[in-house]
Length: 148
Image 1 (tube, rainbow, N blue to C red):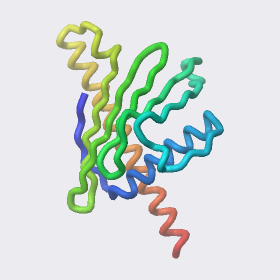
Image 2 (image 1 turned 45 degrees about the vertical axis):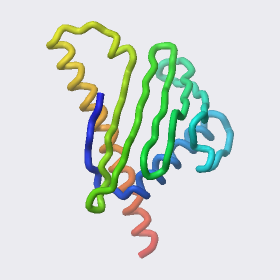
Image 3 (image 1 turned 45 degrees about the horizontal axis):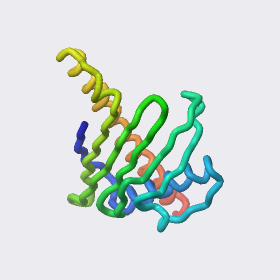
Image 4 (image 1 turned 180 degrees about the horizontal axis):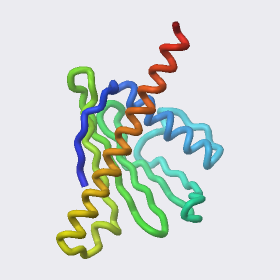
């Protein structure tokens, strides 16, 4: 599924957030302290998900700061591929968010169920992007308060 949204954040803020979030997640689950230069094709790590009680393998498929981020998330239940392609537009960030969930794509749905399911997934994808935007704006506001 593909979704395009324009967020009220800068390219720098988005990629700073993405890198920090990824590096913190890697450290939390592996105890490995990596740097931004380590975020590239081939980076892999494993984490344990308390909700599903299973391991999840995350692989970076491609990354270029300011342009795109592509990753694959594998569990015993599913394989999900996500990508963010970005472009600055009028001091905002246009994001093309692609998400491919193998189990969803492979299921045979009747037209109504497929339409309904796609609506749910697109809603979740939109929520994901707006959650990122809200976290970035909150960080921006906290920095402004500290500097004043």
